[in-house]
Length: 128
Image (tube, rainbow, N blue to C red; front, side):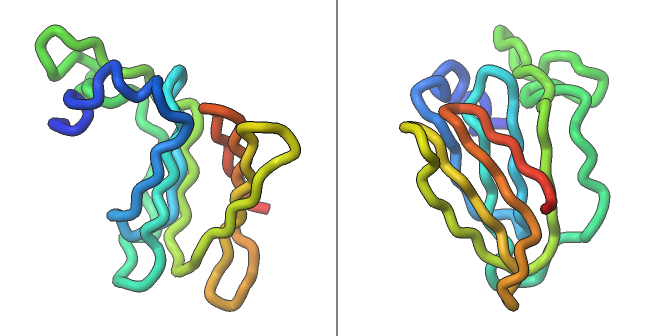
């Protein structure tokens, strides 16, 4: 929560947040915010394979949806949350237009298990 409060109002300057701590591959889109890609499935014990439902409320809200930081409204709920728990890697290539990127996620034996398309701040991912 400290990081979310610290970033409040600053994320609009970016098109993508790329992180790598959790032990899974995950992409999340919160309306009006840059997409977030988490590439943490490279070489350690993985997180549990299930239980990753799209939250009903966005960051800075508790389970019932009430604000948790005084004076800061919660972010909207995610509109896209793609999670896959398996070892792998990702390749990214520029799209046809400026600000477009095509992400491809592969297992260690080079089998495609997800594709993501990014255009500006918008990110959408799915299994092939």
